[in-house]
Amino acid sequence: MKKLILTGILAVAGLATTANAQIQRGNWMVGSSLISSNFGLNTGGGYNIQIQPKGAYFIEDNVAVGGYVDLGFNKVTNGSPTEFIYGVGGLGRYYLSPGEKGVDNLLNHGRWFFEANAGLGGRSVENGNSTTGFDFGVGPGYSYFITPNIGLEGLVKYRGQTGFGNEGLNSNITFNVGFSIFIPTSKAKQIANDAQ
Image 1 (cartoon, helix red, strand yellow):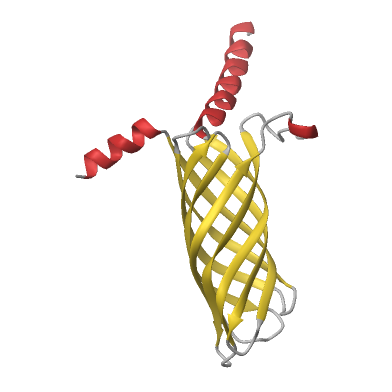
Image 2: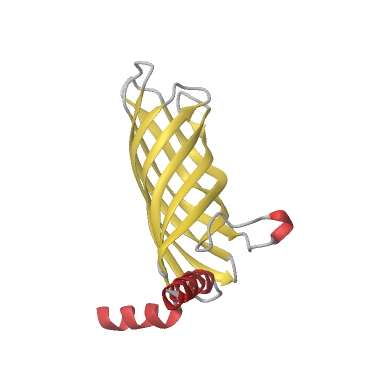
């Protein structure tokens, strides 16, 4: 029994150590937000079917920069017509370290993070309203590592688009669910070499 308990403790400690190793300088992160719930600020709330592929490179431990593509459909619950959302741009993430200014990990193999994005994007609504221009967002999230290299993620984000079209500014708060795969540099090089 003691061996079983000790093995369990070592496995959890190994997962925590490995999860921290995945967000070190030189590693890659690829993933996507898949499902989003929209809490409208100047429009009604609703649900989204959305794909937001992202990729980022860790320029420092806990700091990643990269890009995203945004494609989705929203159905607003107040009877408004369906809208199409699109965008492309850059993103940055900062993962909080355990013990930072009172930050405690919810679980040993998960990490809190902040994400911000900026780029070009917009939305087009069936009734003819649209906004196209500057696409931006910021918010906190949590990545729960189900394996040493795969994290399930939840992200609450303020999102907005401003620029041209019938509406000057469109903004909302979203709750996104998705995943990320963390690839150490040596494995990323091996995958690239295998693809050639």
